[in-house]
Image 1 (cartoon, rainbow, N blue to C red):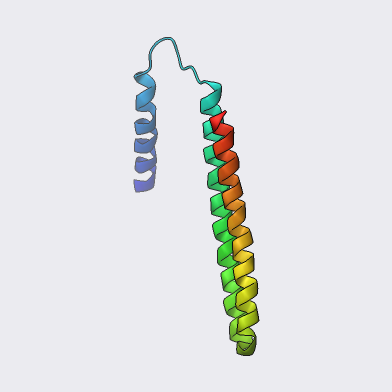
Image 2: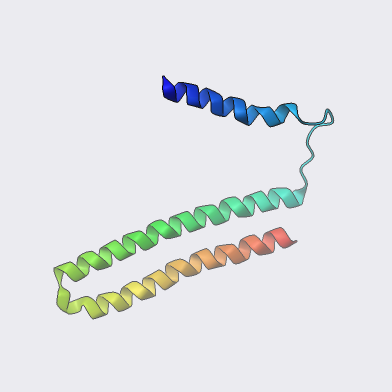
Length: 102
């Protein structure tokens, strides 16, 4: 019951700005839509890169636990993989910034 009340309160709080708008309506420019697209793209890329990095680190820790003698090779491969995963987030940031700058 508490969750339903909180959800109703959230909906009412979200609807309040609607009543403060001018009668002419909202005008959204092309630059604003590009910015929102860039934000959503960067958020998705960062979140998925974080998941990928977590899975890579977990797999490397598991591999090191199974075979401690190969920990050096596993570490090198993990660092290379993490660098490639992080480069995806950096490329997404560059694309998002370029698309919003135009």
